[in-house]
Length: 336
Image (tube, rainbow, N blue to C red; front, side, top):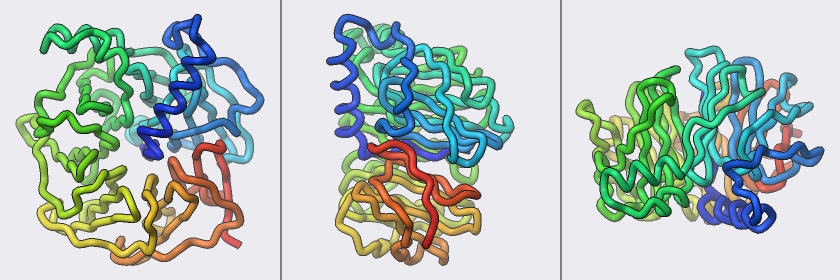
C-alpha cells in the first residue's frame, strides 16, 4: 500500500534540503548514511505507508523509521544516504516486504524487508547522465532535481515523479530506470507532486491544475479539469476519483476523470494529504492541521475532531488511531 508524501511540498521539501546541505557541506549527502538519532521520530517527516503489518515513515536527512505496534514505538532503519526523503510506496501484492522511497538529489531507495534496511537504486548523478544523453541538458540539472512521489503497482512496475516534469519508470523493480518525461503532455515542465495507481489507471497531478493519465501506448495524456491551481494529491477507487490542492480546493469525478465537480471543504488552506479509512471513509489533511472526513464517497466533508493535531504531510488510518506525519514528526491520535 502506498500513502503519499505530502506537499507542504516543494517549499517544505526544499527547506529540508537546504538545512541538510548546510550541515553536511563538506560531505555529499549521497555518500553519507543517515545518522542514528533519538529524535528522528520528532524531526520533519513527509511520507507514511503501511508495509504489511508494519508502519513506515520517512523524512529529513534520510531518516526512515518503522513500527510494529501501529505507531506506538518507532525504530530507525538503516539508510545509505542522508538526502531528504518525501515519498514511500509498498505494493500490497508483495505483502509489504518490497518498498521504495524517493526524495531529494534524485534518490530512489529500495527495501526487501519491509523497511528495516534500504539500498540505493538511483540518484541524481545517474539521472543527470540520462538527461544529458537524451536531450543534451547539463548533468547538474538532473543531479539537483528532487523526486517528489513514487508508485509501484507490483514488484516490477513503478514510476517516480518530481520537479520540472521529471518522470522515471521501471519494469524490473528498479534494476533499471528509464527517463519518461518526454512521454508526458507537460510542455512547460511543470512540477509533478503525486503519482497514483487507481483502478488499473496511473494518474499524475502537479502545478497549474495539471492532471495526467497514462495511456495504453505509454504516453501521459493531459486530462482537462476546471481548477487551474496546484494539485497536491489524487486518490479514489473504481467508482470515484478525488483531486485536491491549494486553498482548500477539491474536485470529484465519477466517470474516470472525464468530468469534475467541485467539493466544498470549508477550508482556505492547502490540502496536502489523503487516506482511506478502515471503514471506507475518505480523509483529507491540511497544511494547517485540519483533518476532514467524508462518509459519502467524497461528496461532502466535515471536520474530524482529534485529541491532537499537526500539519499533515501524510495520513494513515491505523488500528490505534489516525497516524499523521508532518514537520513535527509522526503523531498517532484518536478521536475524543
